[in-house]
Length: 345
Image (cartoon, rainbow, N blue to C red; front, side, top):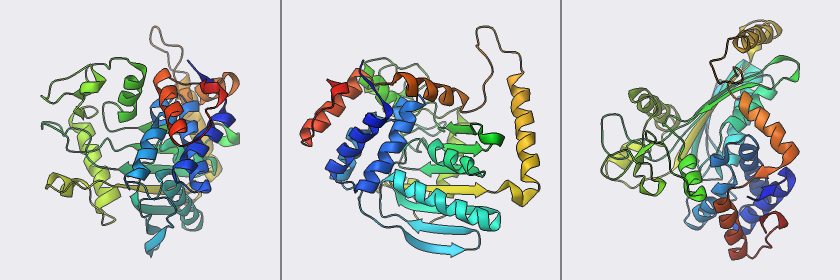
């Protein structure tokens, strides 16, 4: 299994995306997001996505070089249209606008219309938390997941991330979850690795649960009606609210794709003493850490904590790449006329 260092993987990923048509800034921002996911062990949202991102440029799903256009700005809210810009760039801009509003007004909400796939959205909330803000990010896209009690694809695996700052530069608490039983990227990773998937992740064309990642016709919602209900609400908040509905047109027979998102930032100081808030968060974190672990567990962790532990390990030892992912990256490099780096040979 090939192993890459952070800097060389970012450089190679950026070069691939630039060769495919991304601007230098878009390529660098997207590469940073993808490798951040790999560092944290979220390989399903890492560089294995690069060939698909290249394909999305070629098919017009992603349009490099777009500039954000303000659609509406009102009080602590704003809406921007990104013209199908790379999702990493669009959501970083939206999170930045939300952060600016929060620092000025206590809270900021930025609707992100017409973006593209935004990857591991904990990247954006973690950045807000590092600035001392509570970050909330959601994204919505075309159907990939079944609606509870119905056949076929009806909703997306719409993710939700919430990050909360901690005092003294400690790693923030970062929840980053899909509304599906599993993120699509994990099924992609299983394909790349040649592994089966657990039952309960997805169904085949007949509506039966399958362990074959190649037979997946729809992903199952997390926790049944809870997952599909939460996904529906994210579609309303991220898409319908900003005038760019995705699901209803699709289910009505229009083969409409597209992605939308929202970034919400909250300044704890708007609610009282920010230092007291951070201290109370730390008290809560300590109480969770002191819980007795179940047999076989190596401790009780906060949301996102395992990812930070993995990041430290991979920064020291390198980032492992599945053989299938390495093969796809080599093929993409050769097709785009780039040299294959030593870590892939």
